[in-house]
Length: 124
Ligand SMILES: [Zn+2]
Image 1: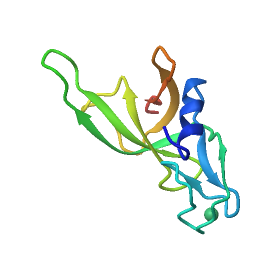
Image 2: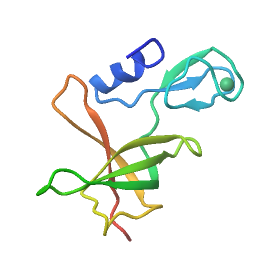
Image 3: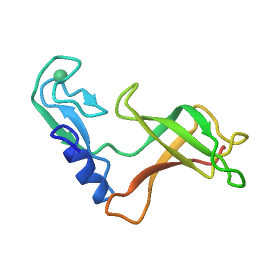
């Protein structure tokens, strides 16, 4: 946690995804930075995105023998192209994960910081 990431972490403690957003050009910025990469403004505020996302990419992370591997997704938030949050995809396996799937935001963990995770919507 540092000056640029403090608001993000404080949001996680309340099960809220709180991302940096430029107060001048309105660009969402994640991971948080002290300066907007689009217009170089240092007028950085924080807002909560909807949590709606699409699976942009993923990796299957192996774990210790006997456990199921974890699917870690690159969730592209609906608010902006390439606004990516990297998080586990619940209940997905290498066989069921689908690039382009609609994702919904959920939370796991016992605190004080909760972990954002996503779940694939059922294929229609
Ligand atoms: Zn900007």
